[in-house]
Length: 144
Image 1 (cartoon, rainbow, N blue to C red):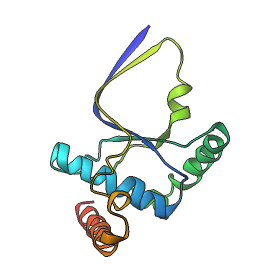
Image 2: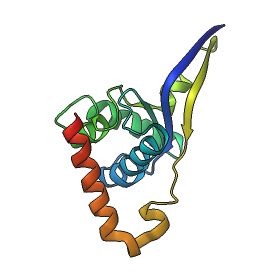
Image 3: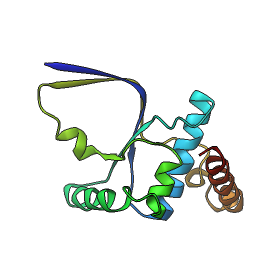
C-alpha cells in the first residue's frame, strides 16, 4: 500500500450545483473565513474538493469543473483562483484513486461553517453579506 501525507489545507465541500451564486455564498464566503480564522491568511496552496448530492449530479459537476476551472478568464475559474492555485477536484476524483493508495490529511476541513453566513442570518444581514463578499473579492484580487 502507498501512503501519502498531505500537509496543505484540504476542503471537502458540499454544493447544490456549480453556479456562480452558489460559489460566492457556499464556497468563497465559507472557505475565505475559514482560512482567515485558521491560518490568518488565504492559503493559495489549499486543495478544494467539491461534491453534490447524487451520482447524476456528480457526472454533471465533473463536466462543469473540467469546462469552467481551466480558464483563468472564466468567472468560475476566477472565483476558485481567489482561493487556490491547485486544480479543483471533485469527490469522484478521490474515489477514482487506486485501492492501494492511502491518503492522510493533516489539515482536513469537512463541510461548511454556516454560523456567520447568510444561510444562518438570512435577509437580516443581506446587504452586509454582499458587502463582505465584495470586500473578500477585492482583498483577494489585490493579493493575487
